[in-house]
Image (cartoon, rainbow, N blue to C red; front, side):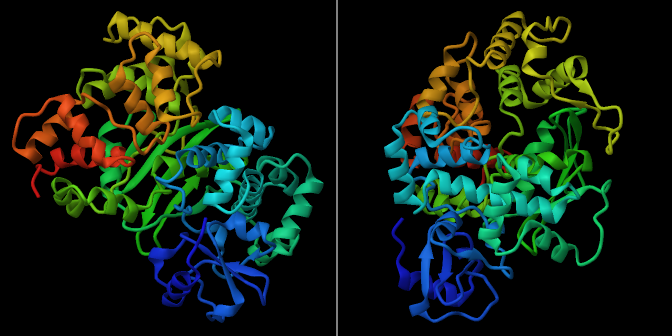
Amino acid sequence: MELDGDICYRALRSRDARFDGRFFIGVRTTGIYCRPVCPARTPFRKNVTFYACAAAAEAAGYRPCRRCRPETAPGTPAWNGTSATVSRALRLIGDGGLDETGADALAERLGVGARHLRRLFDEHLGASPVQVAQSRRIHSARMMLDSTALPITDIAFASGFSSVRRFNTAFKTAFDRSPREVRRDRRNGHAVETEAPLEVRLSYRPPFDWDGLLDFFGQRALPGIESVSKGIYLRTIRYGDCAGVIAVSHDAERRHLVLQVAAQLAAGLPEIAGRVRRLFDLQADPAAVRDHLWTDARMRPMLRRRPGLRVPGAWDAFEIAVRAVVGQQVSVAAARTLCGRIVARYGESITESAAPPLSHVFPTPERLASARMNGLGITTRRVETLRAIARAVADGSLALGANGSLEGSVERLVALPGIGPWTAQYIALRALGEPDAFPTGDLGLIHAWEARTKSTVSAKELDCAAEAWRPWRAYAALHLWTSLSDGGGG
């Protein structure tokens, strides 16, 4: 990605937090790269080079600054809305998509050639997919060294390295210190409690509508699985053979979400943190979304009312697919009740929960693939659809991930019995992280747009209006849904 050095340098001198994560600064005289908000003395312009992402700075030979910790910056939004392929590739890499396979296999999953994928990464990020994956592994390991008491050998494999030797070499190259030295310095002589919950801080780019997300999740919280209380989101999760509870709260002053993870889930910390980032849409660039949607005057009152509105994501794509099918043509409250019955009957119980109201983890696809689901109040037709989705996910014929395009994902979903465009787009919006997904025909969206335009509109007319909101139609949909609870006013 081509960055204007003079503009970046002015942003660096301002220390404006709005530029945090948008670019990184390599200082040639020190061999260090920093965030624009680094408190260190501003280097001379002739001594700095600017990079679109941390991986590009590391590929150029720079080490992360120990003061501003660039690996903790909000996700770089340089590619958002510019290359959907790069965005999907980054999500797959974040899920470990290059830990066991190469870049050719990643490109095949995305439906593009390997050479084209490398060209896109070089254009938008200035780093190759392999370099981005290596940066992810190193930063995941650093997070685990800081937050857990896991042995360093376990951290090496949990962060995606195939051998301890490669891990030690890569870590020493990146930080100029060994993993043992980093852990010793971080603890400062104090031992980490092995049974205490782990805590990780996850950055975001302001503004951030925390209350809007909590309200959305609270209305849909599944009994036994989720809870929203006193400004904290809790839910049960499973990682490997362990189940436990995570808690997410908001530190508005420091612009972080605080993630607490049960100690028994320590080995899954990188994946858990990545899922929470997607759940709360922390990678979003609210300024870019606002600037685009602002061109439609009818959207402006909603943008003013809810700056920093995020698209609520999903902890698990299969769970959202089930909830979307159950929620067809019923109210949010009714869908919550029906899904709660599925959880109570088919979900695995947690015998020792740190949050007593939370008692189960969501059923697996294998469990629901043959479940009768009789007596739950769910129609026979929807039960058949739920089983079809569960079987397809269980046998691998349906991959609910960031593979291919939005259109391809929707096409694969609607090929299943009982899945229409609305359900497929809703799954894409929440579970697949597609910023341009738009649940066509949704009555709530139609009613909200009618309130905005003060006229009767059809689903087709709304779809036509939504064309101007590409590639951020998912955010427009959330603004419209939210306007109903806000009273629809300006």
